[in-house]
Image (cartoon, rainbow, N blue to C red; front, side, top):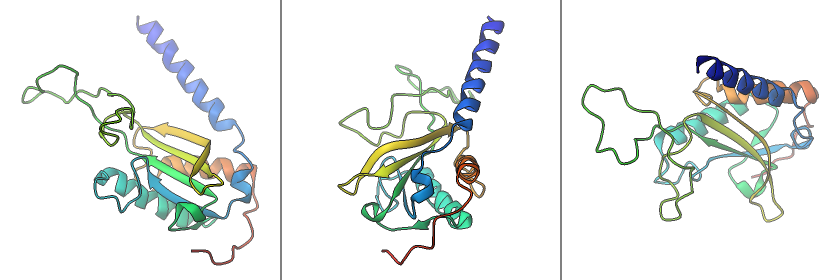
Length: 184
């Protein structure tokens, strides 16, 4: 059983390294404006989790430090839309709670938005997630062009998932786009 678990871990790590080696799409080369939001909405949404709100801020700070793209306050003005989601702890289905003194179980419960009655349940994947979308013609999220997950991957000030993307983009496209004209 331990051998099977070790093989599964090695296969997962191998697939992660293959994904990291893949060249990011050319949209990262030509993009100038980016917008950052959480899976459940932008930072001004009142029901947004504090963890997601902090992840938005940390990613924005990381993008400012990178100095390759200009942040915009509107999804419609962005070339790329960065979507963050902090990992969530769940509870065991059907359990009446966790006894005092017991470690909290780490069980994912569904995906964000999978329950149409409660799209912001706060439950779901345990790992932090960073997704990057191209903007659609309607000014909304279009095609997903990059995604990565990692435990504590959105923790500032370093934001490991953003650093992973930054490294891949700078290797593939060493020259940043020209300085953009002012855009809201």
